Length: 466
Image (tube, rainbow, N blue to C red; front, side, top):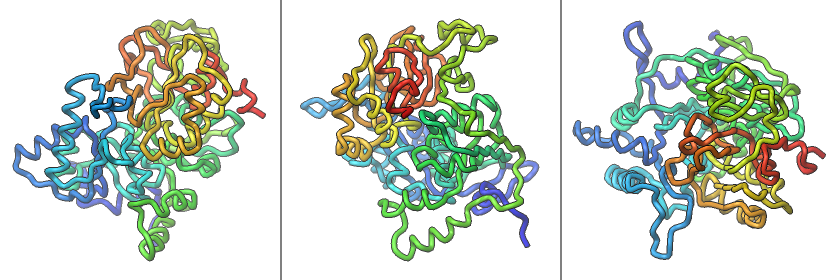
């Protein structure tokens, strides 16, 4: 009888081509590599330089998202590129995908969008897979029970050429959260709370498995939000075991199995869970009742507090940059910009939550609000429900799909000194523009802050707390 195994161990063992030794890392097979325009050009150039062929074009999927403007093209079909380099990156990806036979979802694709939104929507992300991308937040796909992690440009080239990757085996960290979430508390608040609890280095060298009744109650969008930010506590990846919620999401999507293949796949996917008796290298347990709407107050995602709390002491650099006083409340601080979007929180359920707050209200004077759907599909679904009309009526900007203000490399930035309440995943200095101050929050908290013009606990609004 075999020893009980964790979910991570099961996926790892399925993909080991050559085991790790004292001298060398393991060789790991990669089921799917996702590509975008920023981290792929140099990898393709290296392939060309060495005269190597792309090993498995069918195991690659590409889109444009990071550098793309989120404003519509003009009447001549031209986009408002923030730099010539951004345009060149996109054009280069087009050329590389055409040359190597890679499926690309570009400007004319109805599925174009943020790579970690459109991939799952197409059914390309499936339980038990190994998935890589030249992007830190590839861990998003772990919500499906896939081992997914970001890699560097050199490693992107390795996968292009060999469909394999050198990897040292990570340790395992189990994070168990039990109980129902209170009204106004969302999956974003859960992962911010976790990062605040274990710290930005708490997951270093580990793959996290999130389990417990709190995660089982989440829809797939919520699970993706949680896994997305695993890297922000230093983890290599985040995992949630697949279940009926997962299967229901995937069924009938374009790249999901169908017919008898679907039945066989689901039968296999049901085995992808941590066995009773299997042990993690570390275990953290959290009571969901202790989680409240959470925000960041400092300059990394581990600087977290409840939105109604007081700014902590002991971080003079962070306090100085954020222009905050220790012991003072963050709630009530004036907000210049609100950004609802990114691979963390740009899915349909995120937009529905925000729209419920915006409905019948106006964006506060002196505050600007951007709402950026994560994909073409999400945009069409939101517009079919009239969500775009709610945002526009409130005075918010309804944009085209893309990474937008998450990383400030596509023209969507704030001005120096401005405070942005953002549903994205990183609040480093200058992340959303030079000198810009970022407060990470859930879509509910962000929307509430947009209509009040100040950092606001969403539970103050009757729609959030009946």
